[in-house]
Amino acid sequence: MPTVHLHNTDIRFEQSEAHDTLLRAGLSQGIGLPYECNSGGCGSCKFELLDGEIEELWPDAPALTPRDIRKGRKLACQCRALGDITIRMPNDAQFVPLHRPRRQRATLVARRDVTADIIEFRFHTDAPAHFLPGQYAMLTLNGARTPRAYSMSNLGNDDGVWDFWIRRKPGGEVSEALFASLHPGDSLLLDGPYGLAHLQPASPRDVLCIAGGSGISPVLSIARGLLSDPALAERRLHFFFGARTPADICGLAELQRLPGFNERAGFHVAVSEPGASDNWHGATGFIHELVSRTLGEKLATLECYLAGPPPMVQATTRMLLLDHQVPQQQVHFDRFF
Ligand SMILES: Cc1cc2nc3c(=O)[nH]c(=O)nc-3n(C[C@H](O)[C@H](O)[C@H](O)COP(=O)(O)OP(=O)(O)OC[C@H]3O[C@@H](n4cnc5c(N)ncnc54)[C@H](O)[C@@H]3O)c2cc1C
Ligand code: FES
Image (cartoon, rainbow, N blue to C red):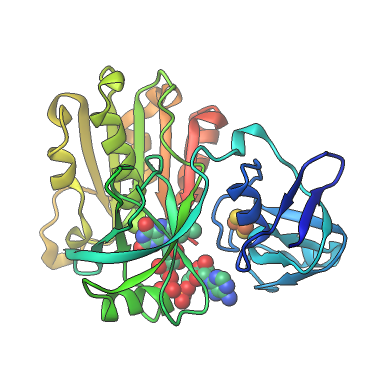
């Protein structure tokens, strides 16, 4: 069983499961390794190999720049040790998982159309579904070459229920297969939870949730976590959703069912591409523009959670950090690579 040693520390962990990446091996043993996407897209998990041999699962993953490749930097979410190794990689208590990832079979118990291209998939596992609002899991379909990250839209529970809102990406290997061939009774491999952009219940601040497209799934979970927790009853919720067309708007019905939604929360939508026949009279343009117009100076006082396509998250974080001086530690995001 290969052992991974973090250079300049006394931290050693084993890569005990055959399919483990270095990142998964570390997190599953409670080591606080930095990461974001677990999908080769963000580059937060870069490390340098100092000794030993590794296998690279995706050598040309998009997070690796030509400079990284020249310098020999690798991604911990896309590498496995082939024997004992020593690596240079940061670690910090803030990254230590509260719930360590666990691999298990999950059976689909229901599927429901949310919009024309988003389906809610509800899975059941024998073990409890322990995760924080806003976290995600890696799903591996039978026969698929690699897992994909999908965020839970519900709350952690002892009943083993995991809900995901998944958007069909035209031509996408896994989302197309989920839509076409996964039916109640079918199962897949679920590995989770993962993710650091989860609800911060200790924050005294009101909450801003911003979702673009399928980014609705984790922020719905965060809204549920906030409004369902009596200890957080003083916090207000500002919920913003960026849709491409009016037909893509979703989530309001679920939010309105939450306790205190009408008294404590507001739901705002911007549509970026309204068609002439849509008869849309609401806000148009990008969601970060509507957030900036609506909340202005108040933004710096909020705990902000964002999820969606990388360009939407990039434009929104720029607006928050640069235009409105929101402190970086108040901004939490998942980019859907
Ligand atoms: C943290 C996170 C949370 C997400 N949550 C959601 C969600 O709640 N709902 C939702 O609809 N989508 C979500 N996504 C996006 C989702 O993971 C998929 O990228 C999306 O469904 C498209 O996958 P696909 O297989 O259909 O498309 P494809 O185009 O076939 O695959 C796209 C993705 O697969 C991965 N990939 C491609 N090749 C490889 C390889 N060789 N090895 C490893 N990985 C590879 C990359 O991440 C790439 O972006 C999330 C992504 C991330 C990173
Ligand atoms: S966590 Fe490895 S590239 Fe994003």
